[in-house]
Amino acid sequence: MPPALRLGVNIDHVATVRNARGGHRPDPIRAARIAAEAGADGITAHLREDRRHIVDADLPRLMAAVALPLNLELAATPEMVAIACRLRPHAACLVPERRDEVTTEGGLDAAGAGLALRDAVARLGDAGVRVSLFIDAEPRQLAAARTLGAPVVELHTGRYCDTVPGPEREAELARLRTAAADADRLGLECHAGHGLAYDTVAAVAAIPTMRELNIGHFLIGEAIFVGLGNAIGRMRALMTAARSNPSADPAGHGTAAQ
Image 1 (cartoon, rainbow, N blue to C red):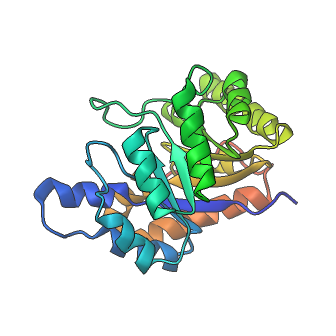
Image 2 (cartoon, helix red, strand yellow):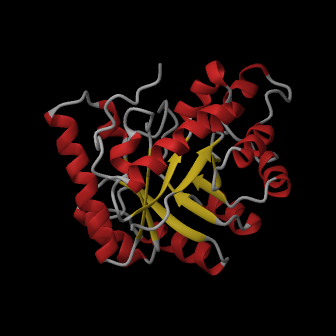
């Protein structure tokens, strides 16, 4: 039996809606509380340099209001690393970030990174923060993560989720499976996220060495129609079913939202 699979719920886009108009509603901390009640194992939030989602004031409120572990996504800049070292969330996921991107467009180039990334990993680790690197499913990126001393990698699932069912999607899924197995052999805990939805989550959840999935945008969008607790509950059920019976419908066919 593979180890339990955790679900981290990303609340960024509740803050996006709030920030579009200003004020205090909708409150991302309320979303985090609902996620906890619905069975989430952790909360993920991305503090971007431009503060387009979560803002600084959200973070201490979030850590005080919700007992679940906080996974703080951030760029490996001196400002962001200093904030994380001061707040000391459970985990920090280092991600690439460009001001003009709509969302994170790919994995961090850990293999091509310089001393700044190595220093960020070391500083966060010294502060007691568990570090993960958000990378593409490539052998050289996995090897670099191990060399840099990060105990966790999060595989970027965007390319897999963005392809239509067929050979291209199966090829992307094979890359994820291989990378997850390689991560395990290297002693790295393997997570995944970006773009996962009802129709794509099962195959990734069924990967036996996968330990955590971080899902946000889809759940917040689905919550408009069914409520956040219901959206999370269904996602959790799909993950559990795939984990307990990985040979059943590994591509997630027939589980798309209605």
